[in-house]
Each structure stands twice: as C-alpha cells, then as structure tokens.
Image 1 (tube, helix red, strand yellow):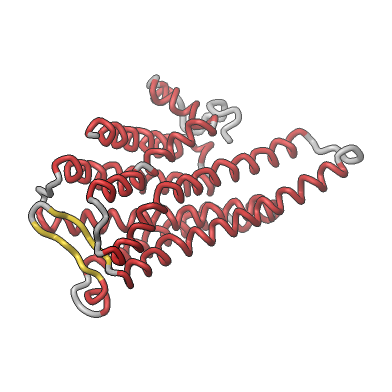
Image 2: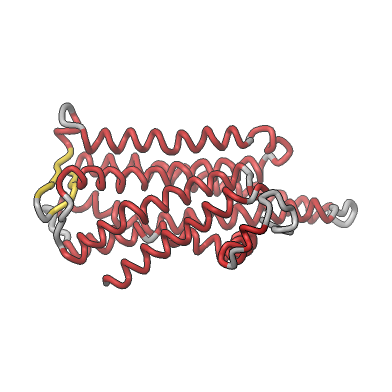
Amino acid sequence: MYILFTGGTIITLCGNLMVIISISHFKQLHTPTNFLVLSLAVADFVVGFIVMPYSMIRSVETCWYFGDAFCLFHSCCDMSLTTVSVFHLIFIAVDRYCAICDPLLYSVKITNAVAGLFIVISWIIPTVYSYGTIYSKVGILQTYVSSKLCLGKCVVIFDSMWGTLQFFISFFLPCSVMMGIYAKIFLVARKHAKIICSIQNNHPSTKSEKYSKKKERKAAKVLTIVMVVFIFCWFPVYLDIIIDPYINFSTPPALYDSLVWLGYFNSTFNPLIYAFFYPWFQRSITIIASCKIFNLHSSNMNVFPAFN
C-alpha cells in the first residue's frame, strides 16, 4: 500500500510539473484552453505536494502526527482543491462549447483575458467556500459540520444535512452542468458532421479547415475523458459522504481511505491522459527530459509542428 501511495504521489508531482513547465515555457502553447489546463495542473500539483504525502502517512500509520492547526489546513486544501478542479472542468467545457458550437466568434469570446478570469473565479470561490466551511466557529456551519480533530485523527465528518449539501454543491450540480454542456457539444458536432458530409463533394474544405475542425473535436474528446475520469474518481467518496450519516458513520476506515485515495488519484490520471492523447505534451516531455529545453527559445515555432 505504501508503494502504491508513494508511486501515485510521485507521478502526480512529476506529471503535473511537466504540464506546468510545458505550457508555461512554450509560447506556442499559450492558448485559452491550455491556460485552463495549466491552472488545473497547478491544482493537481498542489494535491500531490500538500495533500497526498500527509494523507499517505495518516493512512499507513493510522495516526496524525502534525497537530490540529495543520490538520485544519490540510482538510481545507483537500476540500477546496476538489472544488477548484470542478470549476476548471466547467470552464473548460464552456471553452470547448464556444470552440465547437460557435467557432467564428470563438477567438472574440474566449481570449486569454477571459481564460484568466475563469481561472481566478475557479480558485477564489472554492477556496473561500471551503475555508469558510472548515474554519467557521459560529453560525449555521458550526451547527451542521461536526469534526473530529484529535491526536491520532484528522477526519472532518459532515452530518446528513451538510453532507447532502456538500454533495450537491461541490459535485452533483457542477458535474450535471458539465455533462449538459458536453451533450450539447456532441449534438452540435454530429449535426455539423452531417452537413459537412452532405456538401463535401460540391464544396470541399481546404486542408487547413479540415485540420482545424479535427483539432477542435479531438480537444473536446480529450477533455471529456478528463471529466469522465474526474467523476469516476470522486463519485464514490461523495456518495459515501451522503450515506455514512444514515448508517451511524459505520464505513470501515480502510474502505473510506480507499475511496479518498481514488479521488486523489484523479490528480495522477490527468497528466497521463495528456501524455497519451496530446502530441504536444509527448513532444514537450521529450524536450524537457533530454534537457533540450535550455537550448530552445520559447517562441520557436518548429518545436511543435502540430501541438494540438
């Protein structure tokens, strides 16, 4: 188990660091979509740096050695970064919606500045919400949130009411929005495909037009996979948050730990998805690993002949 946790943490750190370096360094990758992917990678990297190592010690040793203050901070990071990821995935879905469904106005609607605004919102709202929930000592949150913070324990337990609210606010509603957006994207993409096929013989598209459409569809496909993996990883633990109060909090600690770590591994899977589907990421890994990055200018247009 220790080897699995350690390996997952190392892959999370190294994989997301590769994404961060790649998009930050190469100007050719400075697009609104990639900036959102970069910010999501930062959130996943923080999970690997702050959350996973201490959770690994807690899971293996079944004890918390780092004090109540850091337990609060650790719990806040754990809770907020999940919601940060959800917000990023929503805005990535919006970005893909504009690119696929309204391509002529995409460059006007979704600029780097707009992507920056999406990123700020994705970090500020979840952080304020999560830290307010955990650190609140008065008012309604104190009534509905019960926490066990003692020597050897670092577990935040939500009662039935707040657990249900947490599920709907942080998971169900955002994921429903994402799924609705992607369903619309694929309906529009299918409609466009039929139209293109019907007129292709009389009005063939240019090579660049075909490449652009293929690129946008592929980006939507990859980012849909990212969304599906997120749901797969986090749904079980959120479901347990709802069910546990009704069974007198009798979920075995080992099972709960396993569900939590499945959620953490979402941050591990994301860079692996990019590595498998994105040629630009495969190319950048080669450049970084071979230290050629120090010999290349960040604006070199020959580095990624087809970066999407």
